[in-house]
Amino acid sequence: MSDPFEVLRPLPVRVRPELGETADTYICRLASANHLKPSYLHCFIAGPSLWFGKPRLDRLAALAGRTREDLQRCFADPSLLLFRPQLREEQDADAIRSELFFRVQRDAENRGLSVRVLSERHGVSRHTIRRALDAPRLADQELTRRRPPPAILPLKSLIDPLLDEGLDPKEIWVRVIDQHHIVVPFIPLTTYAKEWHASRVRETFPMPHHPLGSQ
Image 1 (cartoon, rainbow, N blue to C red):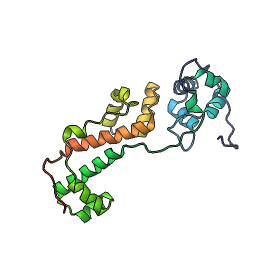
Image 2 (spheres, rainbow, N blue to C red):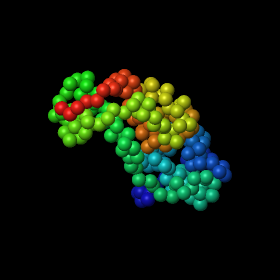
Image 3 (cartoon, helix red, strand yellow):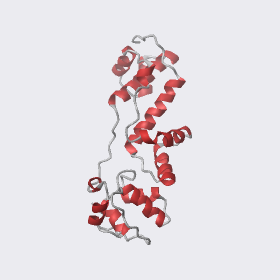
Image 4 (cartoon, rainbow, N blue to C red):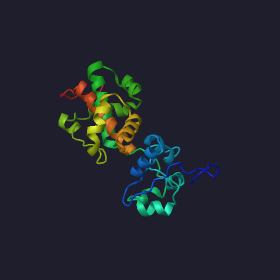
């Protein structure tokens, strides 16, 4: 729902939407025609607090000088623009648990930390720490088996070098849309970035292959 005190006026240069294009590509074309960064315009249209989410149809129509109906007739993704999506974490619970268990086992093995210290260090209960220490070790191939989210897989060649540069998901999102006019789905991007960094940790600290007992 639009802010009743916010008045959006059309941008100076109006761009005709093309039949079958997506809102994301149209926003990039609209930004370029008005000498704006696509990342800035996309975030502005998505609005607070979903800056990196799906664009809002009402805001886009106002800035483009078009009606909502005109945009809906042209866009290939009109259903995604009707409501503001709820921003939520979409993380794999099993992946999170496996990563926590790996870190606990690594600290117990390499640092000789007690259950109490491990509990404080990782911010979980002592019961969880004991479960991690008693859990079977995952084989290396099992840890690296997870594939990138489907939305990220075609963009790996763009995203991986940026992760190597040390960019965080927000910086990557901005770089890709500004340089390539491609909007990366933000939640899958954050999930992939976390798994990418976790895989580097596992390469740096290989998991021992003998089981640990409770301490």
